[in-house]
Amino acid sequence: MHKILFSFLLTSVVHLYVAIAFQSPRPLTKVGIITHRIQDVSMLISVSPTKNRRQQLHQLQATTNKEDTNPTATTDDDDDKPSSSHNPLKQAYHLYIDYFDRLWSDTDVNQRQKLAKERATESILHVKNMVSSTGKGVGEEYLWKENNESEEEMEETAVFTDLDENVRQQMEESCDLMLKQLNDSSSSKKKKKKKKKVLVGKEVVVATAAKSNEIEEIAAVKTIVEEVDTSSPPPVEEEKVVALEKKKKKGGRSVLFGATMGLAVAGWVYSGNYIFTALFTLMTALGQLEYYRMVMNTGVYPARRISVLGACGMFVTALFAPDLHQITLPVVSTWAMMWFLLKRSSISSISEIATTFTGMFYLGYIPSFWVRIRQLGGDIVQPTRLAPLVKPILDFLGQKKLPAFLPKTIKFPITEGANFIFWTWLCIAFSDVGGYFAGRKFGKTKLGAISPAAGKTSPNKTVEGVIGGCAFSLVLATLGAWIQKWPYWFVLGPIHGVMLALLGLVGDLTASMLKRDAGLKDFGDLIPEHGGIMDRVDSYIFTAPYGWLLCSYVIPLLQKLADSRAAAVLAV
Image (cartoon, rainbow, N blue to C red; front, side, top):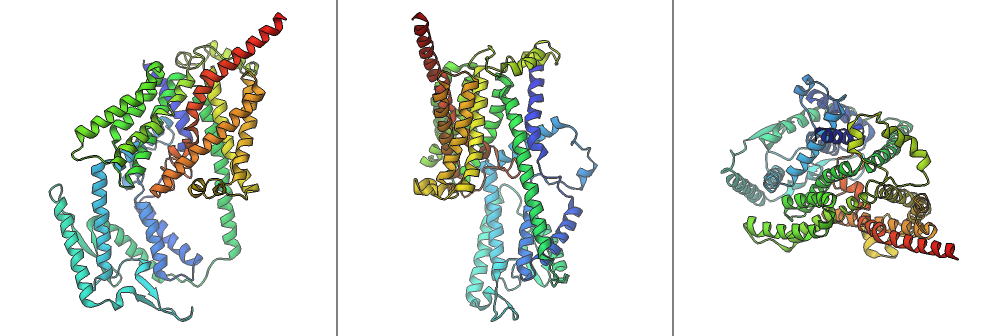
């Protein structure tokens, strides 16, 4: 048992190390952050000399808040800790655990209520600062307007200068009343947050104690902003060179990332049933939490715990009891309804029930068919037309020159199911690549011309891009059908490729529809510049049941037909 566990952890390192390699650099310490902000101020002013200082400070404050809310931020105390950059096992473990804890916290109802109260408090304080006679806000560009007839004569005036005094007092009293109610409602659970006044230049701003340090730092940076000369912007050519270098660097990283991810996924597919299912289950837990966090952003609170547990149970059932796999969704759905009836203190809404069932079906039951496909072929090595190329590797494994636990854990990795998954995933990946390049090169007809809903969901997709994706997938699927010795591969391969491209498009548009309704760009931020788990696997979801149907019924039926025809020819 310990050998299996050790091999699972070792393989996890291989798959997760790719994401770790492209993580952002280690966050700066407090001193480094202040220095970095000062540099940002100088660049901000030099690049945009025509903007007024309050707009510049507003952009700086947005950058500051983004840095301060980074969940991986560290303090000076972390400098004394030993670095774990050379320990990929610890990196993989902490990467997964940290992301899982963050998602779990974001989907916790009590935590979300706490954050909602904090945000409401900060918003009310902002309003109070806007209408207060002693404070006019910190770096908020919408608090000020420009009264100028020409660009040479610029004068900043507070928006609420002409506000009636009685109205201003009533608004300020209303803010105080709402703050009192919020503080009274949370006083039974924790102590009331202390407020203090922070002097920013000549302005006095009321803020909670948790935000006072941030405002003080912004005030220090604001002083620097007012002292920096904005009369010398950098040359235009230098800006173009910097932008071009960033674009090339990002493109190179994307290509390298895609190639490395391809190798990692190939190793995952051929890692054996146990490791394949274990990693799939771990990713499913993250994908479920990403989905439910997105749903909660819309104000709907589904049954999170029972859904994640049920979805993971579907993968385990598909591995150890495939005959019972079909009934897992009805059983887990019944458990979810019992949870709604027994655990909720109020009547659950239709939206809460529907999103719970959708999460279990969309991210649990449908993708678990990949585990069913992975088991096809049993422990028999599937002979393909590439067998002579991989024979040395199989001989190497058979001679047990590797550690003794590897052959026991990874039993006959090159099976019928593994080959099908590899070529199917490869077709879907290249369908996305082909659709992207074909859309950029030849795309003229928007997808909305055929389907208005699809066009509104993804305005950038074109009909030419869809055709290009189908063409790329068709070529690879035909090649894969020939290599895997499918019956009538010259007909079945092209049909399979087009089906994969279209089903992948359905999965992509479904995920885009969900994100658009929730007002999000990505499901998560696990992989920099690529989003979360759901952003990477959305095209593969709806292809799983189709793939299982093809492997289990269509191909065997065609094989029997081909064998009977061959036998008839030999008899004649």
